Length: 122
Image: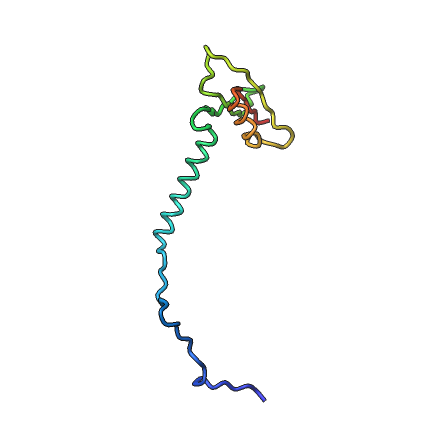
């Protein structure tokens, strides 16, 4: 025999007295604004980390190779390194099937310690 449920006996849930029934929702515009602010803060933060608060200058280079080919590289230079204040240089090649971006953390640390670092993209 099938179960028959009488719709008049169903109890309706009532809110507990003293609790608000209207939930406050954040509009889509505020969500978008919050996302944009978080993206901006993240971009500024990563830039400050990558340049050690402005103490490291990062320059993208394109070096001419054989037969018209070119090689891209990044130069990490401490701000105090100049023609008058020379600093040692380290050339980094990431290796097989890697890119120069995999060596950013090593290059930053070397530049923080006073080395000019050239990271070549093979």
